[in-house]
Image 1 (cartoon, rainbow, N blue to C red):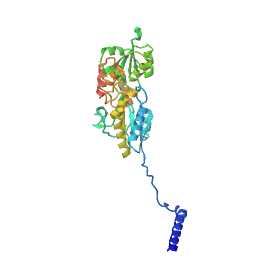
Image 2 (tube, one colour):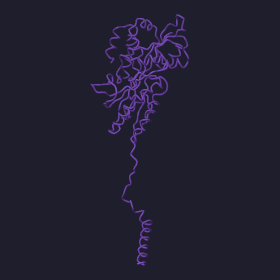
Image 3 (cartoon, rainbow, N blue to C red):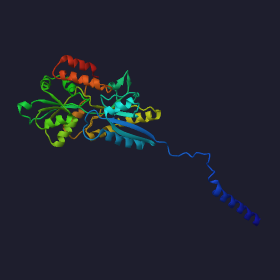
Image 4 (spheres, rainbow, N blue to C red):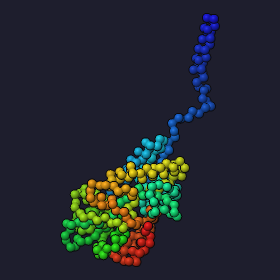
Length: 332
């Protein structure tokens, strides 16, 4: 019996040695070992600025929201990249698209997916289907410099971007006082308009929340009157994903950005929520945040249409009723 046990032990030992020496290279020759880690789903977001924000970066804001979203959704990664309207047009024409796009009026997109998220989306629909959601907004305001005492400086400077319609906001107020101001109005790029105003060479500035931030950072005292009839300073977000799984996560990310948790953080970049009345320590920002503009333009308005509306707004802001009527027919 003792000999039998010794013999058995020797045979088993030889088998183990043979397996380790010759068999390891053979095992798995015809078997693919799969990685147990889940495959990552990468969602691409393009951020397109068409108007000045308050402070900070909207691209950074979305990136921060994306990091928080990733922690709640294992296996999902979100990249947020800044693009120009021209870059979007060129890439879309070539068939290159993100999974989500954040944009304003004048950006030429296509292939947007229908979404069902927070808000009524009245201005964000086409043929009763919703394709966009506003996730932050700004407002127009009239700034008055009480230090501009010289008669020749009692003029209006208009801060105008390539895709913005500030004079529509002024025209819709339908104030004879504003009509007279517009007779000698000068339209300038945003920073140039601000510099002219703070230098005292223009008593009035038609600007946005960004100008309020600049003035307060400078310690410059100005009377600020928010305009409530119109604003096109809305940042929208739409799904453009082709993949079914990415489409699901893209819409979930929109829902997260529109949640109270994220909307409350917009005060950190001095932007306003379309859904919440965010409180600010500053009275002027509280007044701007409380404004709910009555009219806007469709987020799907092209650059050419914006240019046409800008031409009409110049006449309408001087009191031309026919031009104002044409503008009202386009607004939502």
